[in-house]
Image 1: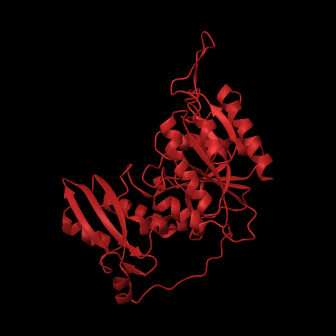
Image 2 (image 1 turned 180 degrees about the vertical axis):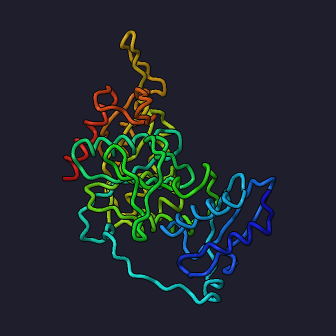
Image 3 (image 1 turned 90 degrees about the vertical axis):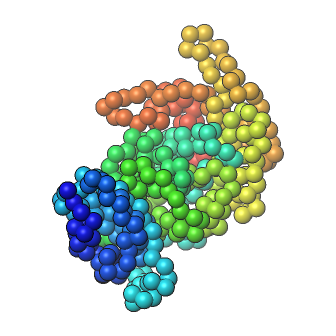
Length: 350
């Protein structure tokens, strides 16, 4: 069975790419737990959320398992400024990727927000992105809901982004390029980071990823008006805001706060999507308004924008051979609603 000493010896072979020193030499091993060969590590790197982190992550797992570890759990942190200075500092390399955030960028940013969780914001983000791709648009999606990342699972993505020439290439599914915090953690681990680190991670989703040319970039925001949502609104040169609510009065009331933040940061209100608007019986065709009525209309009126779609409760048909538990086929009745929503978005933005 692998010992703590053997683990540390093995980790000496793994370098922090940005410092060209081993993660043991940099003092990057913050925490080591070893219970019967089940190893848990907290590792500090010069930079996190980069292509280099993904390489180090995979290398640690491979090296320790080859030395006899049963399993390897990883968490990442960043070295402090003082530690970096003591190690000789970082050599900054110029960013030569696509200037998505430049004023000359032709990409339309669509931020999808809600006042509270549980209203189906990520479902709306995913199906809007897929529907835009079906219209022939070049589409990307950033799963910016850092604490509640779910986009890869919803889209049935099991692979991870590839790293080519130190650039992260998003995973493509249904014609949509996807990047998510879920690709950077092991075994669905919780993210226990504070605001500044989250802001750096979001920034690297733009600067470290090879997006290519995009017509639309969808950003699935965390619910509410916290640090990540505020950072994104400050970072983007301009975005169109899509607010998701249910018909319930309280959901619409708190969603108004998210809309107000977008307006105050000079971003354009694209419209409101009312999710879970009703349940339609397949037997009788009757509609049951499970969460009440009117929330979407009232929210759109308050934000002086348009109610773009009312989406009923439903479930996509599950294809075991092409598994994607939250993506509606275009011919599905709800898929048709998303298709019309995408068409309306194109009309309003182009």
